[in-house]
Amino acid sequence: MEGAARIMQAYSDPIKHSSSAIGRSLFEWYCAYEDYCCIIAAYKLRLPKQWRSANVEIRQGLANREYAGLTPTDRQSRLLDDLWPQLRAMGPRFNDIQQSVVLMPKLEGRLRFELATRVELELRQLIKEVIDFMNSSQVQEILQSAPTVPVISTGPTCLPPPLVPYICQYPPAGYFRIVLYGIIAHMRCILLQPLLSEMDKWIIIERTGEQDPFLDSIEVCRTYAGLELVFGSDPISLFPCWSALILAAMTCPPDLREWTWSRLIHFKNLGHTRLEIVKMTIATLWQTPEILESSSETERPDDRG
Image 1 (cartoon, rainbow, N blue to C red):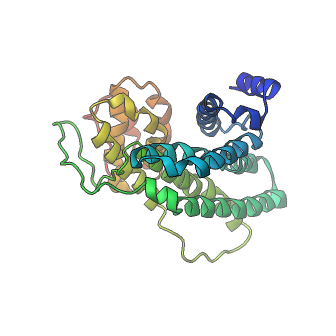
Image 2: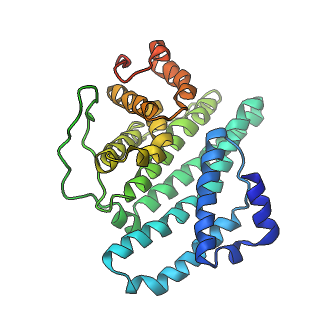
Image 3: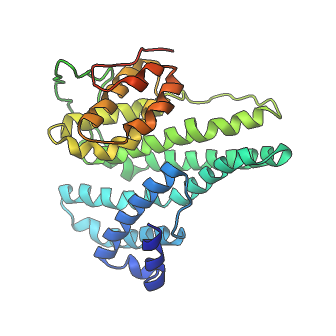
């Protein structure tokens, strides 16, 4: 990844790189890979944010000229392709905030409190911007729900989802929806909480109107259940949901834990090899050490509060 970033900066520039269809396609691949690696490992992004901003601006210029001539089906595909870069353009700010949260435990006293106070304001602003983006007309269009939900059929060892699946009218948009809600859940539950805890050591803050912290992870689960219904015949197509499903397991309400764990075990049975890495974290959060020994879909954790 670092090598790719160096090569792109040495032989191209943000505008030149995104001025061709193949350049935009390759850049989308790079951004998806960079976001995955840097968010999971809390590394700093390798390319300056101008690269993502230029990609969005060029795409928007093309969209203004070309959308009018698209068929309804082509419009959905094109719209989704253009919305992904807009979401990823927020990635550098998300990454900067995450870097600050990682840095916070290394500071002491007043410096630590001042960092927490500043980053908490930045994080709340970014949460608002992501939610505003989610509520925009184009995102609402692509995430419109399907008129009906298929009948759920499960095998003897497969838990049915304990909620109503969400299926997008344009099914590939489900991947976009699960990432959107996953990002918001990550910001509210993983990043915001340590900031608030640090601030509480210094001042008493009265918080009113806070959203239920489980709502975003519930929507992640609903979206995954919908994607599983639509793409279940090709389980490999569900692998892009792996990170969002782990996040849902870490932040979901107790009554969804058994189901999310069964889905993670299902990934392992399909050949995914990274479940062992997250077992310890989930076992600690759920206070269920027995899942460290589980190895099959029939071994499920207790539903503890």
